[in-house]
Length: 451
Image (cartoon, rainbow, N blue to C red; front, side, top):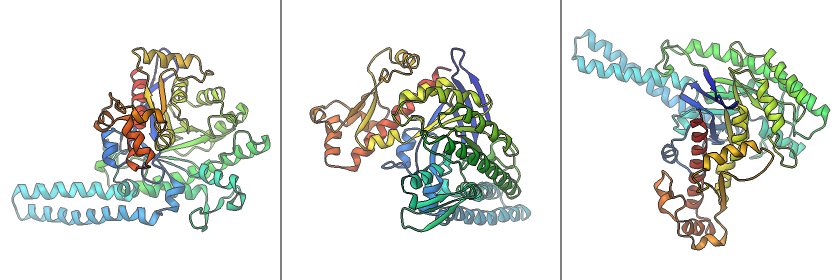
């Protein structure tokens, strides 16, 4: 599932992750399509950006639109599959009746496509619901639920057995267990999934961190058991040599990640990792994620903790730096050996008028390398940020990004974008989001070029 090689100059890794919806080159960044979409963008926009994997959220999709609606997308594909199986029967009949070879081949092709639809439909509906052909990772939803309860204890209760919470949408009561989290993610049919974990703030008391680590390990064990059950069940349903598998195997399981908690306590991080290794599913964990926020309560980057946690993870496992999202932090973490990243920063900041751009300097790559040699210095050495709402841009008629691959960003001016934001026109948010996602895409491409 994952092949990796190291950069000879540092600990940065370059690899390939094989998923049901394609191969992903590492390191890579995933924008958050939390509720099944990236705000203001269509799939055409994402195609133009050549967007790779994205993140969807179990908690949000479970609450709205709900699994019943998402499954309907799969059922529609199932109906198409059944219709095509009839065509398959017609093809066999045509051959028996010595019908024209061309007609039989057309029916055969339709039948093969149907079997592809059939196999895909059984695996879940979020790709169909979103009409997205690329890879998707689902977060377990734990972080969102715990944030909800930590902010307002009246919204729910966390126990070793389960999490009980109220929907912030309509106040309805819900129960989430480790087993249910895995079941939901299988129903979504994602390519990569994350176990449910207890995610306390980094600055919480030692006894609370101890409890979170124990609970995370216990929940991971229950997730692994449920995961193995679902993999076994899926294998029995998918026909042999399913066309989507690419390798001729009957079933390509989703990748599963466990999350290493422990706050800023390195000993607890090690304890959590070792405990997770003991409760792994049959095929082992495919990767490990960094639990909790990558900064402390004062906003300081947890360099030592991130580096220590990365070194805990075996070389043949994928390293997922959850929530790491500023450009300089991504570069720092990639140099530590982290493989994948996700964050709301490029899209959220774009919607608020903050744009990322490369410094106009022939030594931009060299500057990016220098940034890593000064990890404690919070400087913007290889990129700029601007607030397009600032009045100085009202008369700046230069392109949003003259070097962009996207026509809109080359032809629309900063003054026009400023005008759109002042009037709260959604087109402005769309253009800014496109700009930032293109910047992040270019950043990851530059990092991969170092390999």
